[in-house]
Image (cartoon, rainbow, N blue to C red; front, side, top):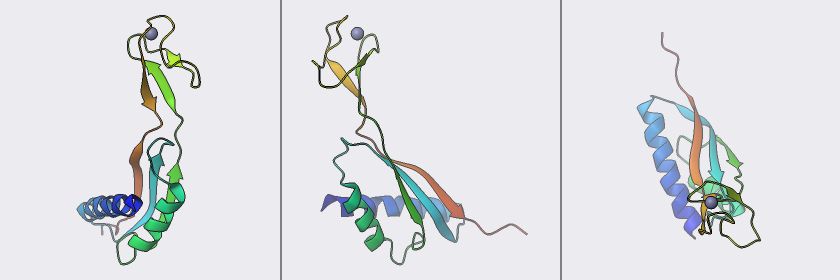
Length: 116
Ligand SMILES: [Zn+2]
């Protein structure tokens, strides 16, 4: 399942980041997943639970933010409602996807030992 490879890549990135900051653990991971990202949230969460075992994310809380699907005109930037013809009424140009396909690591919260 591709959620597993996504999560593994994500965990690798988080670990690298955490180590670069000298963190002992990761408290919280926030990812943003749009409905068009092709990622099943439930599967993603399950994969995270399975894959994080033995990593710095072992006790981390996973938060998933959503994102709205948004289409915009490439030329004038007007928002184009879904369900209609996906083209700008004024420019007659095809709409471009401006949101909804995100799969982004938004934020990680680290436990960093205090400097003495
Ligand atoms: Zn336009």
